Image (cartoon, rainbow, N blue to C red):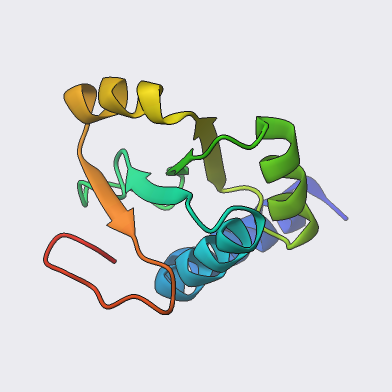
Length: 118
């Protein structure tokens, strides 16, 4: 595969992810909830602020007491990788993110959305 073909394939894949972002976020929240029903998942960064480009990553914050490696491994097994940038933190670190950026809570599929949530 040539470099040009690879770049076209990657652009199409990213366009598919961004075009179906809600479904990807629901899958992500479901995977995290299976690992830790008490975990919270947030979207942040350029996508949450609606100023992203196709080349942007999708920043996700997972708040849990589980080890980051455990969470990341399960997400990767389920196909949740690039362009997602997953940050796994404990509850005490959540406040640092709240002070620095816009957080949009991603509800588990069984929860109803409130304003400002996905």
